[in-house]
Amino acid sequence: MNKILRFLVMLPKGLWRALGADVDQLNAILTVKLKMDDRKPLSFGRQQRSQKPSKYTSTISFIFTLAIGLVYMLPFIIFDNVVLASTMFLTMMMVFLTFGLIIDFSNVLVDTRDKLIIFPKPVNDRTIFLSRLLHIGIYFFRIVLPMSLASWIAVGFTHGWKAVLWFPVPLLLMSFFCLFFVMGCYLLLLRLSSPQRFKETISYFQVAFSILIFGSYFLPRAIQSSAVMGMTINTVPWFKYFPSYWIATCWSWVDGKAELMPHTQWLSFLALVLPFLLLWFTVRFLAPQFIARLSGIDSIDVPKANTKKVKTAGGGKFYIRLANLLNRSDEARAGFMITWLQSNRSRTFRMRVYPMFAFVPIYFVYLLTMNKETSFAETWEHLPQTKTYLLLLYMTGTVIMNAINYITMSEQYKAAWPYYSSPVTVPGNILAGSFKAIWLKYFFPFIAVIGVFVMYVWGLHTIIDVLLAMANVTLYVVCVMRVGHRSLPFSMPEQIKNSGGKVIVRMFFVFILMGILGFGHWIASMFWWLEILFLVLTLIFTWLVWDGYNNTDWKGIKAAEDAY
Image (cartoon, rainbow, N blue to C red; front, side, top):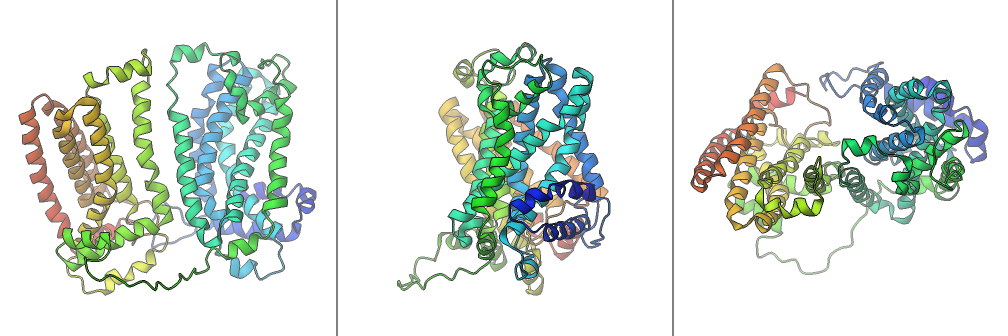
């Protein structure tokens, strides 16, 4: 697969040469990078320690993406108008692919691991930039092709053989637009910000953009199935402002019966020209000095000496005072402070956890408006008469669950050797301190804000529900950690667990526990005294499970690490 894609991207040699790249060097760099990619071990179903290269990574990814693409063929089955169906299909694809580019492929563009090999050689900026761009593009098309295959077949059944031959054209235009637009934004950030601040800036840019993409996908009111079936291209005139519609209008070139909005056929020429304009702009104005800016990313920014008098009274910084207040042992304090600081410094951790704070309220609003015959105003007016606040309170658990899933992982996991070389008798104290930092830093402020909103909308009497939900979510998370997350903070590689059967069975019972807790809360909400009793029992059970987690020994740590 990679050889075929590399051959295809190297076909327009004249274009790459006209953009200032050395074609032979470009081909050599791509060849080596793709070989290295296929030799990476799979991140699932394999012990991390084996590190055996796999020749079938690309093939397995192809099959997995092919299954996901079955969802994207629905517009071609629902709509008779090929332009409307293509607009819906391309919109969904652009949302998914842009989101993937933002999250997964930025590290490829700003990867500095090969600078000691390539940068000292006589390779110009544009060759290196185009090698990064085409490398990402090959990954990109390796996802696009299988994901669109089912839609390609559906187009053939619904619109004939001409549609089958023409289908790759809008698909390529969509891919080029997403690729060059996102890469242009990254290069602009790299050019405007200092190299030392680039990764910090881009992480917040990724978080904000991912929230925007998620919100634009879920916040609009869910359209009823009857409305979808009766939709025509003229009932959604605002589609003409989306690049997906511009690309879809290209169908009018081969299908004279394709229905367009009035006076919008010229947008098809804009869709054809825009990707090449983006490519020319990024290579011509943003790629120069790419090596110099990229080399500065890993440089050490030495801060200026602070000449102000250091205060020694008062217990130091805020997180240090919290660590001393909430932990008895030195090991727990160390785990607390390491987690508190590293969760700020880890760009990967922030990228995966911070968006959840926005996803929860967005998805809650989406659930309120889904499959409703009433307007949002009417739904909001009758909201205090419902118990949907229980759903919102328990959705906050996704934040802390997401945090504990990634708190053990790090790209620099080999730097965790001091854990094992220190005279720590009970490593569970480190785990306990780490959990307290995550709970206090992420979960408590979030559920406090949600709790204030719940009490404002549903009344002050719901304070007992807020406390009970907080206790139940905490109990659930502690049980999850006790069963399957007993790894030291930031000490494991970013690989999916290869869990044994015992762990899977245990986790199954933990999920049953969450269902029991949520259903029990709904029953108990009918009587205030029953909620108080439930709260007391939850706290007792949490303390018992916590005691076992806090006393985790080195055998438990080794068993958790062996599950990777």
